[in-house]
Length: 193
Image (tube, rainbow, N blue to C red; front, side, top):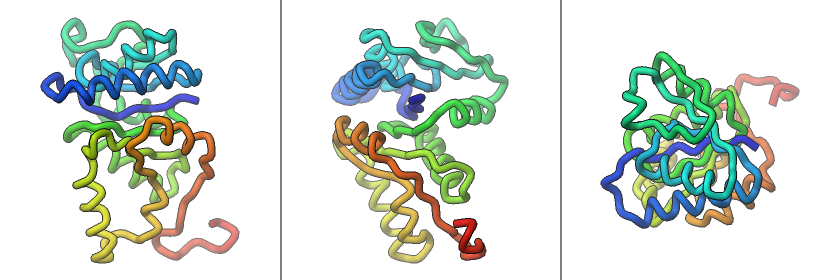
């Protein structure tokens, strides 16, 4: 399975997040999954890639050509170069069978919400997992629950993603995953659902 990991590229984060990234990368390799990622060598992004490569796993990194490659790129993988950030994300989405969201900043938030929106709009049925290391995403989950409580989001939207603080449960969910979508606007005929 090709698993896209969206996560931080920052080096200023606590060490525990980097260690979780390396351990997750090792697990990806041990389970013979291929990593699809943003090709960065810093932060959790680089940590996942290092853990994966240490165990002999394969990775596909997708990176815009306008980045200074010598400073930011993780070269020990298959590299795909793009012209834009949007093209980068599209290639990562297309190449992936599942999405794991680890702690990150604004880019990671944007990647998660776009992937979730596309699933809600039935553009894909791939699993989306928030790997909530050290409770990092607790406030985001509260925000989503507030949107549901105030009817800005359907309760069914909860079923489009899975939240766990355990790497083992990430893989359990992937093993047992059954594709799920719902008709956001209530306009589909029975046979289309």
